[in-house]
Amino acid sequence: MSGPLSDWISRTFGHRPRDLAGYERALTHGSQAAANYERLEFLGDRVLGLVMAEWLFELFPGEPEGALSKRLNALVTGAVCADVARDLGVSVQMKLGKQARDDGAADSDNVLGDVMEALIGALYLDAGLEPARAAIRKAWGDRVKTQGAAPQHPKSALQEWAAANNRRTPAYEVVERSGPHHAPRFTVKASIGALAEATATGSSKQEAETAAAAALLEQVGRLVAR
Image (cartoon, rainbow, N blue to C red; front, side):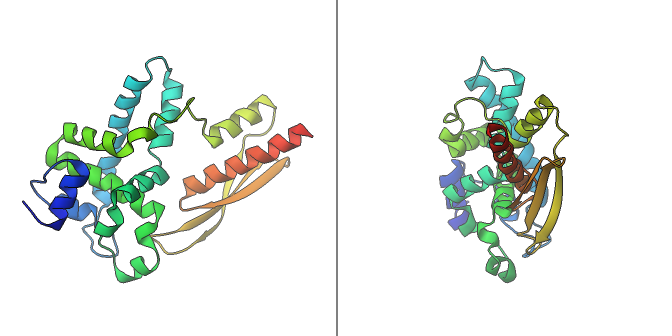
């Protein structure tokens, strides 16, 4: 099988596709067709998680489960998947409706991250686990090894700080949702009782909560330092 898309898949993933249908669907946004990337994203997310867990298990034999989980969570976020997609030139291959493209969906972390996972799902169905594993390891590359200690997720760190200082459990509230369906923006307020609060915006509720937790951590750190 040959053609521009087939050639791109071969260069990008190291596998000549037997059937392009799955890859075409993985690259199709909901604004373009009902047969879009969403189901393949579901599958690709699980394949990525398995391959990444296996890889981290090999790379960090002395780390406990909690530290490995932190590394895994940091490496499979939508933002990281979107960065990988940008490195691979995924946006050029995507099929988007005119309005979605005009609204910036081709560079949306939400969309690119989902499409990256959908492509992994399509590759897995077309070629099996071994080619999918090889493609993921090549695409993520040094991202896995450049971390020092396992990163502490801001929400976990904030919760641990609150518990250690006898404060209320951090609360999160979506205070605003804006933007089109395919490229939403969420503003979330994080608070610890009446002690302090911080707001942040992200392309998903999870991203906004993480950013708000990081901002609140800085605030409580300054309060303690006074």
